[in-house]
Length: 212
Image 1 (cartoon, one colour):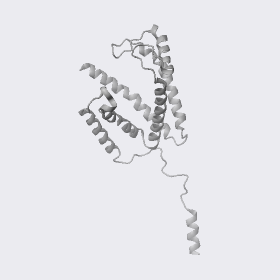
Image 2: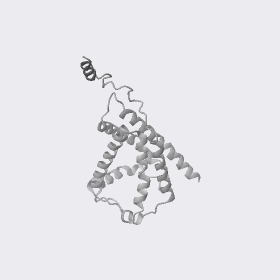
Image 3: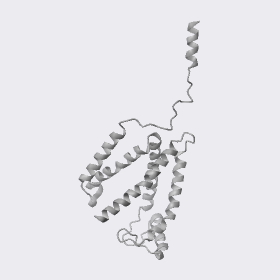
Image 4: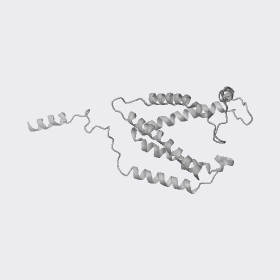
């Protein structure tokens, strides 16, 4: 029980950077003064993720008990990268249990799908809000559980839908209704549209002609 509480605490702490990230994305995407390009923003986010990946790389050497830890020593890192490169781009197996035959094709489709999902995320946040995206993103949990319960898709790893899966779907459904009960207020939206004239001069001219 203590172990479960520890991982629950770590999970909650891990949510905070994601929440800050979504809020930051919404601020920039709804900035009417700059109107940031979505593809440009996605490229910079990917660059920073790669940079922080290199910075946090030493974390993998923390000696954690299996199956959590990677169990990779510093001396094995060069060979690890060589084997990974051969598997990813050459489709060559280096160790027993490797299945690298279609790794490059899967990697290619993964990048395309991941990029499209990111662009869709930016569109949802820009047109709606980060809360709407989080609700939509949360739907993948019950959907994944449902797909995992189909033997034709999951095979030997099939798992039946649990009460927790049904409860999570109900919570998401109720949360969506509560959130959309009132229209969201956009604090960045101007009260008066400066691009639209306050007085329609054409109508005024027609009225004046009628009077004459």
